[in-house]
Length: 367
Image (cartoon, rainbow, N blue to C red; front, side, top):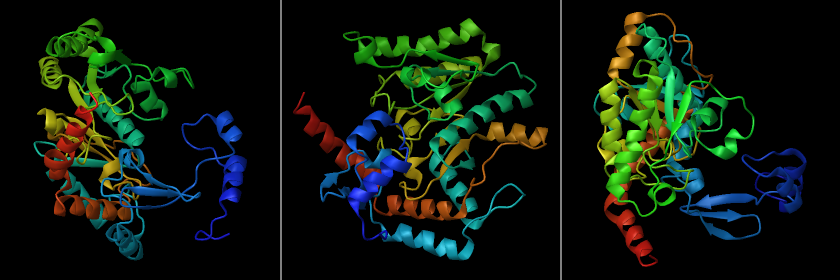
């Protein structure tokens, strides 16, 4: 059996015999006789081993922004692999695509988010957010500011740290104890938490829950508030329009860092390059992944505000954090080409002006 001559029945047998797929009921997977084998993709369509063509409505896992089968992205990986397939960023070194991608992302982020730290997945980006937020206050001589505030039913990845920060009850039932110093408050989910309440009143109340928790634990102990612009895995939960401006105001009032998790919303999902831009707020830390490379290669990043970088540089000494593949040059080259395609084809603007409004109008017919 070669990679182009699939024996689907044998692949399913091997899947049960040797593969543990992510986030699955493994008893059920065995009873089903293995996974659905996806053999190829083209545009927004994926094809399985049984010959079915399937509309990939979730774009993989919210990540294949430019669709499947983009030869430009394959060529970018090919060319970079021949030039410099891999090197790390640990030893005062960096590869050209890595530096260029950092500059490009900082341009897209705008404002004072002029620096970028690279990781490999959204979960790792969240680990970086957590460590940077806590280390920032430690470097400023306030190590007691280590509490992170997140939301119930929020999702921030599957590492121990990410699952701790997230508010998924199903995840918290498995694999604890969890990382200490994390507080959870009500999610801004009008339908689930306050059905029938005035949306603006609920938006104010949900945001004020963050302020209340800051006061309960003590502002001098809170490092950051971390939240998704729109909760993805929690059910595509869109907050009331006044929620995010109020959250930002609360963070500024108490000098708390605002970290926005853009792993799903980033790179055009809300019709802006990043969700925080859609809601008109200015975060201190921004995690991103998925759409940065359209899922063609693993890469993630964290946008970091200037005042955080200034503290790191003023204090000096190693910030002993990073990954073997941080700033992987081949992944960076693919991400650069992916962003070029997004810009050239106006896909972010098209989401805002064309496909987004079309989908909203079509869904309204079902209301």
